Amino acid sequence: MIAPSTSGRLERWTLPDLDAAVGRCRAQNARGIRCILDALGEYARSERQVRENLERSSAAIAAIGEQGLDASLSVKITALGALIYRDSARESLIRLCSGAHARGVGFEVDMEGRGLVETTVDAAVACARQGLPVTLALQTSLDRTAGDLDRVVRHGVRPRLVKGAYGADTHDPGEVRERFRTLAAGLLDRGVPFSAGTHDPDLVAWLVERAGEKVEFGFLMGLADEMKLRLAKEGRAVAEYVPFGGQAAAYVARREAYLAGLAAEGRAPVP
Image 1 (cartoon, rainbow, N blue to C red):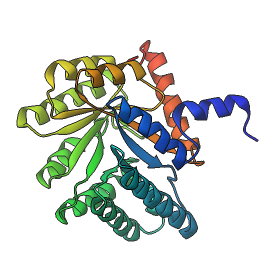
Image 2: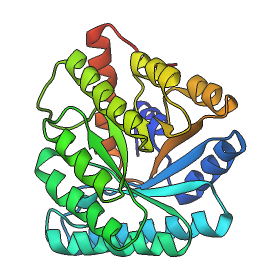
Image 3: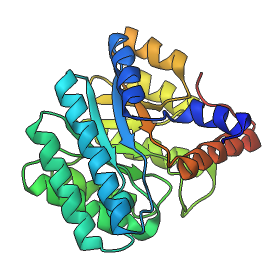
Image 4: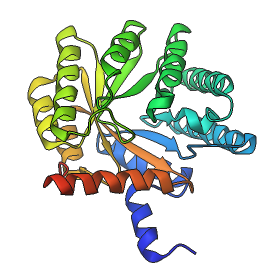
């Protein structure tokens, strides 16, 4: 049995199953907020785990399409077996992307640790080369991201800029913030549509002032509820990341580490 304190932590950040995620998405859609569903299952280390993750992701795509939700599916390449067979994981990702496209459902790829960046970028570019729409998260805390950003934009992959919750090349919060601003400004200057996944009050305020309709504001379930509604009411594109499923421990740990890091800075996420 899950202890009450643990259960409460999970409920803030994740939902138990696809039905709950669909219900959440339907309610958020009514408020003008798009959703990004993630069937949790990262770091799969067996063929059985990979198969189950593929089934859950495919079921989410089907549910989004059948119920006409304003939502996309996001996956992590380790959920598809990248820790076992990288080539197989890449092909599975492309198949999922193709299946989502066939149903008119958006497809997104989350980024993980630096050792997986090249594989993940390659997989997203491979989708784009097949004419499949795809969004890819890129972490501004990594030195290589400026080059990766140029590459994916050149191939028609939509970027989702995030600070990054894995190993970083810089741990200076101010530098990460400035890198985010610099990369976002470059995209805005070039007229490239992108998503901005941040709860940083300074960055959100800057983007609100600078960005037009080419930017989607992305937030996590469990944070920034006031800002989501405010921006949606202003007619801006807003998305909420909605993870679901039982394999939530690693995801929740990253969220709690994020809040602890902000507290150490004397800062708080946007309300």
